[in-house]
Image (cartoon, rainbow, N blue to C red):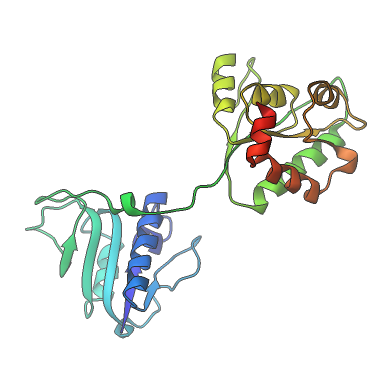
Length: 268
């Protein structure tokens, strides 16, 4: 008999969070450790599991509902009704009704309820950390009038972002109107200084990154090269590319280098 792991990731547009998925993965890891077969109930956009509305409830001896607030209402009432023949386990839930009024579980180890509070189990999760990457892009360069080259550079950055896991922070260095709500040079520089890597088509994206010891993947989006290329040459920073020789491989190689201790030492 199998266990079905469910949560807010099992229902469409119900606001599943990073915490929900971390708790889900932790429960799945525990089940693997004890040699228990399991399925995960998922709904789009999540993949790699089963649809709780179409699976055979008789295939499962236990259902574990994990993480989040839980109240007596749709869609969980439909869900629990479908699996009435299974042992129901609630784990790391915030129970919205008093337990003497509503508790659908055979075993409840809640996060908080009318009887107790416990630490959220995501404290135990071990998700891999990914690079935090500041993306600092030029919007227009009227002095160079080279929209096609700028588009090529930005497309290359987008492909890099799509190619691997990274936590992207878009940073706007304009202060006459700032798309990210930044108000002062200090706010902009402080944000850049906290990145692991900066990917930029702006000269001051490069300068403020390197000033703070943050390696930068730099693309000069002006055909033939302009101030960015000249500045990189003046300060001796090697990770600068022009659009003429821009390839996904070259960008990926520069990014990989910028994640190394050697690159951070060079930036400093």
